[in-house]
Length: 217
Ligand code: SF4
Image (cartoon, rainbow, N blue to C red; front, side, top):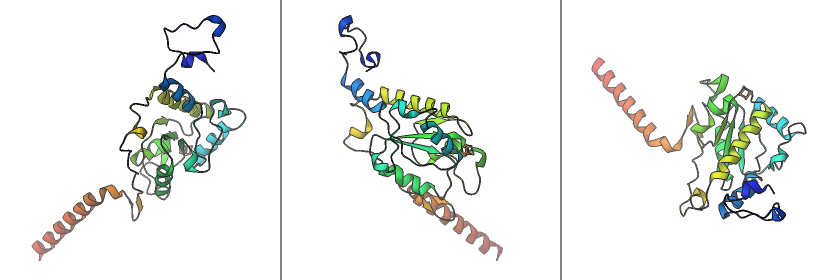
């Protein structure tokens, strides 16, 4: 146990007991345990996924951070690493998987595609970043980011976990965040939360068109 991670400054531990005893807070020990056992979900979307796989393999080995247990089930995962191009066809599945992850849960947007559409931005089949649909905690630039960059991003996530507090964490609030509506794959991707807005816009366009036709007649 790294004493400096847990120790509250100002409480001196006698030298003979250092390494065996730590004076700490509930938040610190709770977050220390969580940040060293973040389990990523095992799924990849495109070329960035190959770098994620390399990060898990022996040369880079993110088992050193307690992250080697990649879970094939969202119900056992803490971190969703969105590694690759996010197509419109894939977004409903990603949102559904995110909803199935238990709190506390985190999202890492790995690479240019997941962060903002990347080289395919504004392509007919690609969304401009996964953060349009689910909340992202860490963005990692690059096309693709190297394994070192992914490890750096995961260490940033650990720092974020370290700063959280049991008193203010959203997953312990009496009213937990509602599930995110799964987008609908239609002629174009639709967010069900915007149905009313889309319906009002479509109606106004139709009325405008009818008025123009009547004026011309
Ligand atoms: S960011 Fe680059 S490497 Fe990653 S999925 Fe997109 S095109 Fe592939």
